[in-house]
Structures are given as structure tokens and as C-alpha cells.
Amino acid sequence: MPDRGSLGEFLTGGRVDSAVFALRPDYRALLVAVDGLVPGPSDSTGEALLQAAETAAREALHDRPVEQLPHVAAWREAYRAFGAKPQRTRNSLEALLRRAATGLPRVNRLTDLYNAVSVLHQIPLGGEDLTRYDDAPRLLRATGEEPFDTVAGGIPVIEHPDVGEVVWCDDAGVTCRRWNWRQAHRTQFRVDTTTALFILDALDPITDDALHATAEDLITHLTVLGPTSAPPAA
Image (cartoon, rainbow, N blue to C red; front, side):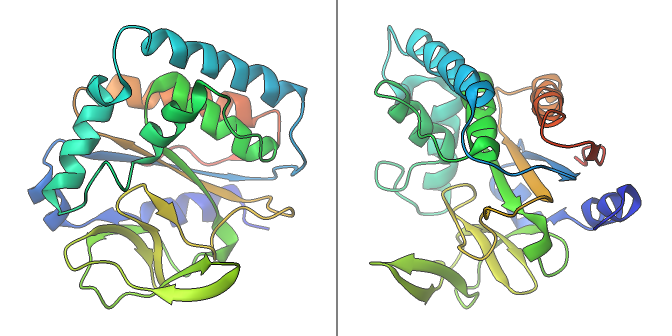
């Protein structure tokens, strides 16, 4: 299993390409690597956190539609900037907020936790199995040739991002399309996932303080699931 030093080394290797900053100079990413998690089904701790997130979402949306929330609107603008249609491909935060009215998904204890933290802080937050990475993560604008493994109709398929699309990648291919829209099948959490990478995305009006507070909240909840984490890398 990775030790704390190797987790930190992995995080240090992550980068954001200059072409992404040219598109959105206000973009910031914060990465958290965690080892020693104990996987399991949804539980009462996660249920309480999800219910708190659902309540927070209802309060945020009681007087406006989700697309008018400042944090959601910023991501919609970012998607349009690289040619995506946000009404068709919603960022992960907006997708969760839209589901909160009828109930957030209950998946497993780890996924439930980070989905709830994402909604509570209104920051897109992704979780992936770190052991399935081939070198460190990087965010770039796609050439259109990068492989993206997914499942369509229950059958594994390889797709490719659009030219200029903002994607997270490693040496094996795309790990998440359209910034924070759809995760690759390869790096999804499994029932035996014990080492995880979490990616927190921020655009204005999210402040650096709010971004780091979200990471600290995530880490606090993750301590229930395991003992070892690496300091966040921004």
C-alpha cells in the first residue's frame, strides 16, 4: 500500500496545462490523496450527511433555479467556453443539486460522503481509485485522440473527447471528461477501493479559503473511513 510520502509525491506530479488557465484564469484545483480507507455499503453516517446536504440544497434553491446559483452559473460559462452545452452535459455540482429535491443517490459509504460534501459546499468534487492511475493527473485541453473508457448499453467502449475539451488525464487516457462531467470507468471506485484521489474544482466566486475549507471538511469525514491522508495539493 502507498505510504504518506508516496501519496505526497503523487500529488506533487499533478498539473494544470496553461491552455486551461488561458480559458479560465480564475480556475483552481485542489487534490487530496487518501490511503487506508475501509470500503463498505451506505451507512447511517453517510445517510445523515446526505440528508444535511439535501436540506442545504433545498434552502439554496427555494427562491431561484439551480442555474442561477453563482457557483453553478460560473461552471456553465466555463463549459460554454470550450464548446460544451451545459443544458446537455451538466457539471457534477449542478447534476447533484438537481437530484437533491427528490433525493441524492445512495451508492456506497465513500461516494455518499464526497457527494454530500460537494453539495454542502457547492464545489464540484470527484473521487477516484488512485491505484488505477497511470502516473499523476493532469488537466488539459484535448487533442481529440485521447482514449476514454466508458460503458454504453452495458458494453465497455472507448470514446474520445472533442477537440479543445477540458479533460483530466493520466498516461493511460482520459480519467474525466468535460472538466467534471463524466468519469472514466477505469478509475471509478470499486467495492475494494482503499486508496482514493479526490479532485476539488473551483471558479470565482469560490474563494481559496472556501476551497481549502471544503478539503478540510472532506478530510475530517474521511478520517472515519481510514487513518492516512496526504496534505492537499493545490
